[in-house]
Image (cartoon, rainbow, N blue to C red; front, side, top):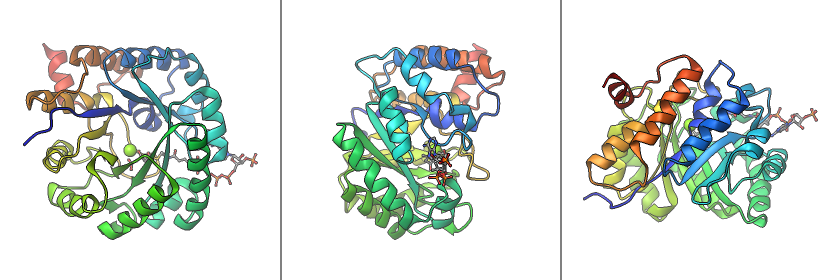
Length: 298
Ligand code: HMG
Ligand code: MG
């Protein structure tokens, strides 16, 4: 019933931090990412090469990329919105480029200031450039279940964007429950359609935990054979351009679930906890993960 192995992408340093008002020092980000690099996680999204005015917290992406200590067993990726972002990311050093857009027109416009059609021409170029530089490319699609401005999104809208991104040459696609509204029935409805069209190895699920449904949705996705998930240490995060979006599902909680089901992740829970305690201290606040709070109380 359950897969043997699951691959987690730690997105805390990008999706987690992008929504944090308190600016972290670059040196602290570097130390934190270095700790994550030693936890056994195989992919870390270390920052974002978007416009610094749009996400000020990550305006030091270039410096972070230059300073982190690279573990050869980890793929270091970063968010890249356009050619300019790709140039900067390549200079700073990436193994993977994550391009992003939305299934819904209005979230796409709010988030990246373009219509879906305009975005395709930008991303087509970025994906081509990243592949020419021999980088892994992941395509994120936001608002795959619900959009904060348009409401329900039907699977066909998601498929249209998947088709286009795969045609441009992305290696895989991460499906984002941006505002954390989905329940397992919606996961069923989307995955039935998506997996009838694409191999499950190419699909990653990206749940935000606004309503506490992420663990239920991950369990449901596992039942469909999905083995790749994005999560954020401690549950840090949210999308600054999606009202009401809370953090990603907490990596600590996902590990508790997966290891309890006998599924291997290669991640050392203790080392991950230490990295979570470190960032809690730097941000001066408790992170939402329940298993982290429990570990802390012991
Ligand atoms: P724009 O203003 O439309 O950009 O922003 P533009 O192409 O018109 O350029 C305007 C100026 O910005 C130009 O400078 C460019 O050079 C500069 P000027 O010539 O006027 O001096 N510029 C840049 N500078 C530095 N780095 C760049 C860059 N690009 C242009 N990369 C843009 C368009 C996409 C850049 C902007 O809308 C943006 O940065 N948006 C990012 C928003 C964001 O980061 N959102 C959160 C991440 S997505 C997310 O969290 C969802 C996800 O987790 C999945 C899920 O949960 O659903 C992935
Ligand atoms: Mg996200």
